[in-house]
Length: 227
Image 1 (cartoon, rainbow, N blue to C red):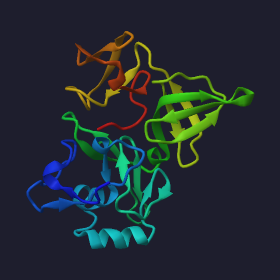
Image 2: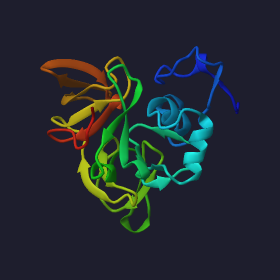
Image 3: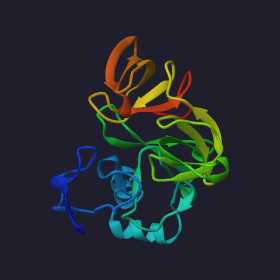
């Protein structure tokens, strides 16, 4: 794998100045897809502007001043993606990674109480012995439990121990967030669900989308701050 990345070649989901320099920090392979995440260093320097240079970012990380989903991270190449929680305890600041209505990666500031919860979409599950199920989530995390949930459902989890607080099923009437497509970043109510397609309503307007683009974020309203 290449260790470098040209700014002109970064995904459209990154909000950066593409003509500032030739190269930019490349994220290490991780839990999120390349286009669904940002390197931790770029997030701190260019998005949150807590440092002006990558050297300053490295010093902050080496001082154990940054947590992602409650775990301290020191690698500025570490990829941070959708619905991850970024905390800087020394500044008493907490942020959640989301998409704007153009499908670009942004941060929204949240309070300390909300920084202890996270939404995890179930992308796969495996039956284990003694009635246990291993759930695989969109952010690469795994959980072994005996709860009953389906693929594409969302679990409201506590951080950093990943304990299930609530199951948010993918069903008609649920509040959904779109992760891809023309309506990426939109929040609406799921009106109709088919095998591959779905219809959701936003501001009394029905829009068709792919079932795989849906991310349940609540029952009657979002369980977390979206914007």
